[in-house]
Image (cartoon, rainbow, N blue to C red; front, side, top):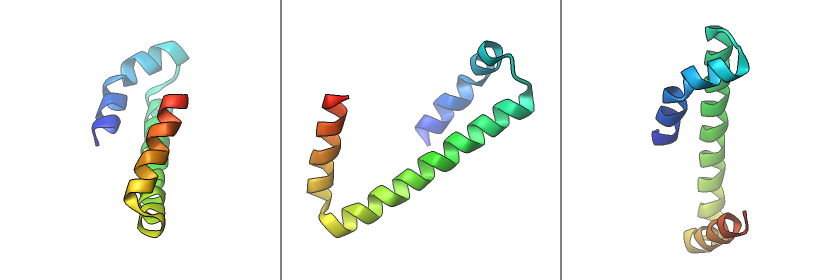
Length: 66
């Protein structure tokens, strides 16, 4: 939920930079929250199947490469 809170705090800047209305900013935040939640659920399912340690190492490698 920390990432969602950060995105909500950044909403006025997003609104100014994009020149969007409040409805558009709400749609952007809802899409971000939904995408984030789906990725967390998917990662948890993969962790159940492949092992949490293996998934953690893979995530760390992807983060370092990125």
